[in-house]
Length: 381
Image (spheres, rainbow, N blue to C red):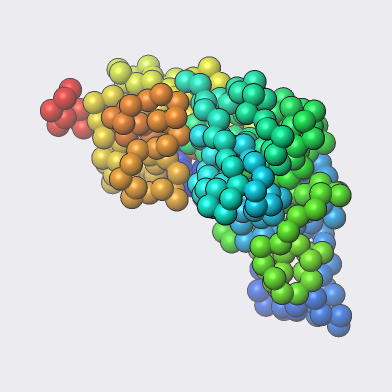
């Protein structure tokens, strides 16, 4: 059976070029990057080269990049590291759990947290963020691209609101990095999170941009790694992989491949809508990451559709992988105004750099017939 993977917002395959770049650092180049002898210095050079590549992707200086274990740690470090107990933070109802749960933790230690709502397109209204500001507001944290719908948030406008109020601004760019151009100076953020395994690097590596001059408290204590901002021996193979993936992503964007991916995504979306009745695009009307579409198939259970398609060789999802098995429907779709049945009937399709036109053809052959079969079995159809 030929297998097709359209769940790249959950994780992406490591590209061959990335794996080849990492390979030497599992064997012959094994040194601790903090050691001053030859073995350590050759791995230190690899770490710093990767830092330069990540900085180039984000439009910042290398000294502003902190390597982490992934997007979750980067989000935790940004929020917990920037907000003291007793202050106020603003976030949104559609954030990843790495942000929402960190903000919940802040609430438990004496911070005030305001969660801004979104409209039916899944977009945060910057004016609502402005109205939520208080004298004690320390940080605004709004994601760049939603992991379930792909909706791109107005982060530049929100960053301007933060700057006018003298408030720090963090954006979770885990689902935006390597899909849309990022320039932290243009955005105006103080901190920005990315994750390696969302951009065809390995799992277990990520990075946090922190603007020069922004004081941040570490989450981990130990050695003076990462300029004393993140203790722990560097994951050299992972860092090298992230650096190579960042380098490739920058070239991919420069060549306009994001537009080609968006066209492939649109063909999938339009083909489904043309063949399947009672199907609706969630976040329709919002600018979205070029690889993502989230479609509601009324009268069926989304998890049943995921399983049925998987049996035919097509991998898709009902939403965030970290929420798989959750009894409650997607908090993102509920926040957008869908009821529980509608949220449970929604499927996320997310393309990757390895996705081909043939993959889309096969998906368009499988999805309509599978939906039709499940509806035949549905007592509500």
